[in-house]
Image 1 (tube, one colour):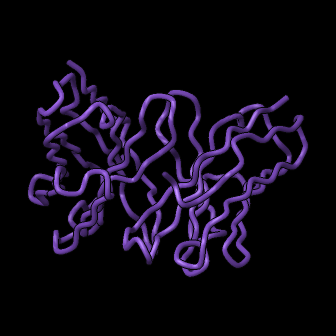
Image 2 (image 1 turned 45 degrees about the vertical axis):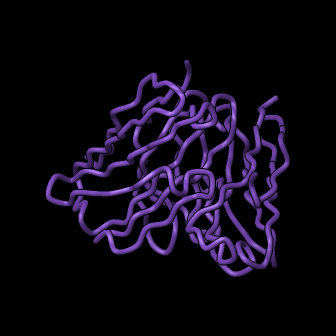
Length: 118
Length: 111
């Protein structure tokens, strides 16, 4: 079964850091580009970041640029999102998703919740 | 804020046809393919349409996508109660140089 499982979410104070993980199984992780997408409470979907299969290309949404860093470990079938200088506007459910060609997300995790609050 | 604009809501009775629009620009919908996602309450999004008009395996043919110029549409024919969900369009944006911008989302209600 093709599966993505996020972890690492939790409650963090403003200005703090958190590292999200996404464990992939059931497919050849190293051949797929990956995304992070978030959804604030009661709001719509917001794309956060992208990484190519070999980590050569990365993109970030403007609100997280300079604060978030995406990475992956193909040997461990894992995707990561390092989040620094968190603000309350980063409070959201964070999803990892697999990219299909030419451009879509066909497999999603269940999401992990990040709450930024003092 | 999103660069793709959708109506906040749409509704229909069972069996009706409902259409959702997604308005963008030449840098996103106008020059790239469009994807549509369905999000049932409390669940992760699901890919509904990719490459503007292609359905992944398992998606009923009641769902169809199209594009004209800088706008795209999702049509749901033979509306069913289980179609009540939020729907989002998405596309690559060449001007922003990002691989994905989402639409504002449309809540479909089955009356």
